[in-house]
Length: 163
Image (cartoon, rainbow, N blue to C red; front, side, top):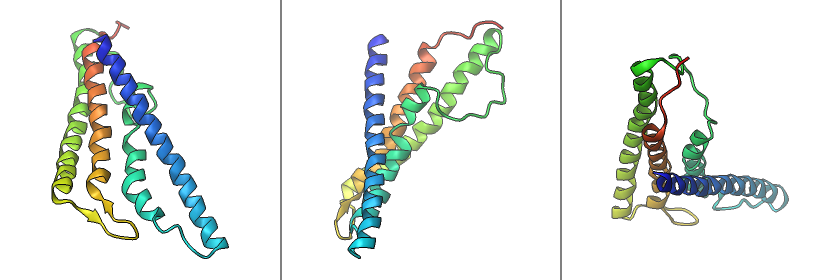
């Protein structure tokens, strides 16, 4: 399982880096658009579609697994984190497997949507013709890696220590 964990960490780190680069590109494009509108009275023609279709989904999903691994997500806990005995083990596993089920369904449905767009050759027409399959594929990729992280943690996490 150690090899799987190492591969998963590298994949998470790579996707997180891509998500962070996406944020940098959004900042540069929006600021360039603002400056060009002010100075040259000409917008960056492709900025809106690129940001909307590709970069925002990347920002929202590519870092999900890495941020979860680092404990960076906000959480609302209504069950104590460590319960004693078998109940504690069951609750600990359910806290990982139920979100894995949810994000697995999100990945599955969005993956079907992306595959459909690829098969039909769907395109967003504009200044640049943007292939939609690639835009839609970002969500199942990010959610799918989060599912892998949740399942990996559920299988490898040790039982909570008694309080």
